[in-house]
Length: 296
Length: 253
Ligand SMILES: Nc1ncnc2c1ncn2[C@@H]1O[C@H](COP(=O)(O)OP(=O)(O)O)[C@@H](O)[C@H]1O
Ligand SMILES: [Mg+2]
Image 1 (spheres, chains in turn purple, blue):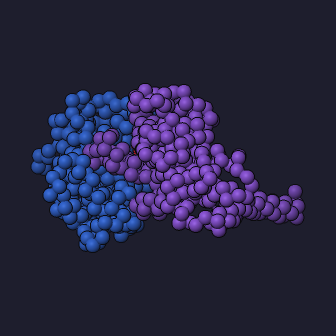
Image 2 (cartoon, chains in turn yellow, blue; image 1 turned 180 degrees about the horizontal axis):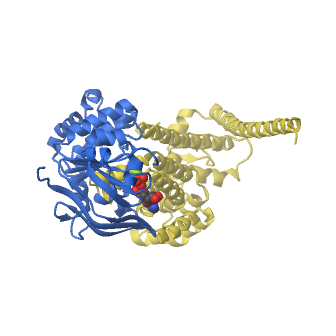
Image 3 (cartoon, chains in turn brown, red; image 1 turned 135 degrees about the vertical axis):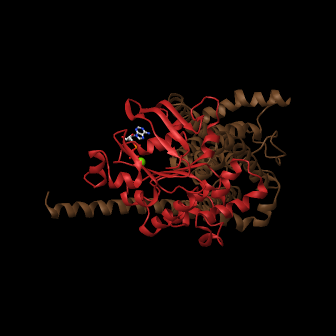
């Protein structure tokens, strides 16, 4: 191939990558604009204060009310519950796989955990209806177990593969020299893990947790199936809740085009977007705080 | 010659990594309050020998050790002794400075915490260790700064401070200056001189001049064997073996 042809190829590929890059940005921008546009349309009809402080979500009643609070509380409850379960379990599993498991166990555990990620969310939701829910109901003496705890347990299961896999990579990537330094001053395995290895892996572990949180906040099908979807204001883990995602999924199908209710669903989607964004920014902040101690 | 006390020794020490025979029947002795240099071409087993004293090979699954190692009369590989105690008594400074990703203060404090030194004593010990390592004047106002922001030479002195803070009896140093500039190297050599009164030091070095500047005794290794050992001046001025002669005159390495 002569130089001229090669340069031509170069130019073509450059154009191709530029176009695809622009396309992605355009699509993202379009989605964002649509979200903002419809949210604004909603706020022309309903005051933002009522929206944010209202404690009732009842768009189809004769006296329609659009209070997002119960939905936000539901989403938060399920997400926090899921994280309380998934974070210790995830870091523990990651630490075990990377520091304690022998080679053979490791070669079995890693793919097994990764396979969890391949289970479709409908299947997990189904598991919630027939196994976890009844289990919770039996333990707590309630008529059914379709509540926030059920959702939290299932979301934890869904977030685990991400958290374990990424946290394990982070722990594995901690230079052996840190561990040796720790053993060198007389630390045992546990002390080395807790005081040196995990802190050194913290940026990666936090990233893992944030990806897990992102998944939990945005997950729809599982919570839709497992949490009961009662739109009354949530009272706790043992009560039915209705998350933002479930609300959108349930109501989007039956709402008439460009009504207040229609716009309202975009508004709550925008709030969901802000929540995910906040989680990501918080994660970024912590990652940077830990990076400070690492070599540039 | 005065009678010298043997602090550290090996008896018929053999070590394999998998099938690879890396240390071949090593019988070595290291005198108390002396600096002993381990020299020899790269890959001859200097680090491996050094690391067998503080049982760093425990972490390598395919390392296999035969023979005995002693700290005075204590059998270092006895089933009933605590390996963490061994590592507290035998400190180590690594080839590449490896401060923890923590603050300067916490780098030293960590070992104190691990070894249950009372909270109230720690601050003084940290300060003392930094002074002993000639680092105090440079860092006394920024003890909370990340240790990774220090220069390479400062990091290595911090690693030495971290080690001496625990008052070990022996300090193992594995080419502590190999990544440092000449000025930092001289500072560390000064430091080694001043530490000799209190500690027994074993230092691996590939630098002949350094071996002559810092050590009292020198052991020359080749392919997993000890070829020659003597007082440093003796070994460099009057080597008994041709291999030693060739190595110290720079014919290979
Ligand atoms: N963890 C290990 N696994 C397998 N082989 C090793 C390991 N560490 C060192 N070796 C081998 O042992 C030999 C001696 O290494 P080393 O003691 O590091 O040499 P030196 O410090 O004298 O340069 C080398 O051939 C090296 O490749
Ligand atoms: Mg070496």
